[in-house]
Image (cartoon, rainbow, N blue to C red):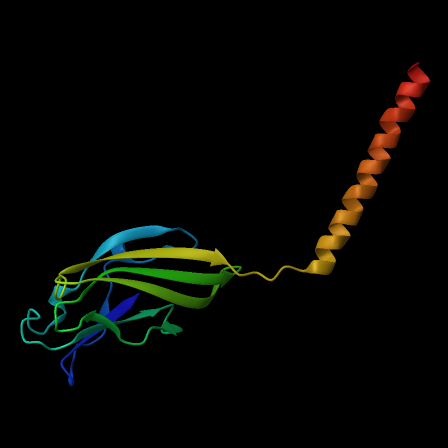
Length: 152
């Protein structure tokens, strides 16, 4: 995972690695605190908007700029990233953000990563499986009833 910041209208940081302990782990729900203050810019007192962007899976999934601080006292507190995957491939990314008034530019943000299986369900295969299961159950039931009749 990578991140970069923008502060003001024209000042952007370079892409930086997200620390290993704050990175997502495939198919595991994890959470951590991500330090962001070191990404440059002033401490938020200048009234400038501060933003952050994230990149995952070798730039296959990149967020647009997410407001870190609006320069008027509202600051990001939490980001929930939801990764959809099919098998071992990430197929989609969505995110939800939470803010607090009076917080200003946060030094750290709580990040949470959730993985959801987006494998398509095959209705024909599911119905075939249900049919085969019911036939096998019928055969086993008939065998049990038949053995009870023979025994007595």
